[in-house]
Length: 386
Image (cartoon, rainbow, N blue to C red):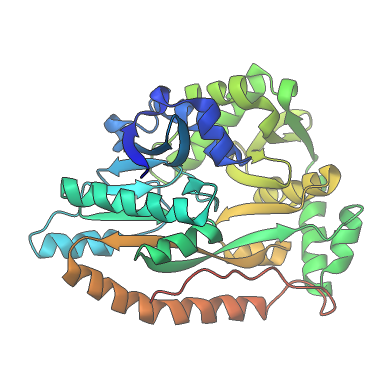
């Protein structure tokens, strides 16, 4: 018997069945995606219309994809504006497009939520069929896990590669162990930055679970909002979302609070699971030299060592993270384009872009901040553009 497909809003999905497929990453939990919807952050009004694809094999949910019909390309961290402009120049509509992603979250992880390769391929093909039946220009899967990549390749997707920077815990007993693993240049730089914060009277606290009170969360949101306003944008997420997140997932939240003479001056919000700390949002109300690096990166690393976490994902882009001990890791996005002419043009572009990106990643690895006797970051095996 063939599986059946349907589309659903987050609030109409069986949360327990969804979470069994999604695994432990906090961003894929039903409650996280539902919070984005019910607080008005990822809704038709903001250009994110949820059409979650469900695949049933009998009464049980056998597969799922977090799909959004997008009216723009903001909040994705994979830039396809040139593709949209090319469509427009030829009198064609690029938007709406279909997106499989966690809104505003450039964190690699499962996107084809299923237990077998065959089920993941079926999901990818089902999403393509939805596009074909509804005249949608394209389907984009952002930051999929490697096992998803193999299924997407079998379904005929094109692949675009990118680089993020992640830190890996090599069983460090303390921060000093980590610092000793770095080469002399980077070890000295990190220690100098730390001394600047210390000389300015800055100290740090980790807040999680019941330790995140209303005042701390309000201060974090003030900082987060300020970061966006300084760049001329309104924030994607509202304060209601963060308070909802605390009520639903407080134990998965880790706030790094920077205090100067006991007055809070900066904050960074991370999420965690049993293995990984995910750096997400930050802001400050006062400039202190080195404060950004200390709050966003060094304290995240310190927390991972303290809690025995294996990986710290520092967010999208940023070569400056290399000097803080984060290493280049290849990520990707997968793309299906309905118009054969544009699909071929994009394929040719990606065939040129991918070797250059991989050469860039290899060059970055040649500038490792670690001593030569230290091991490198894991390499990935995502499919190539072709």
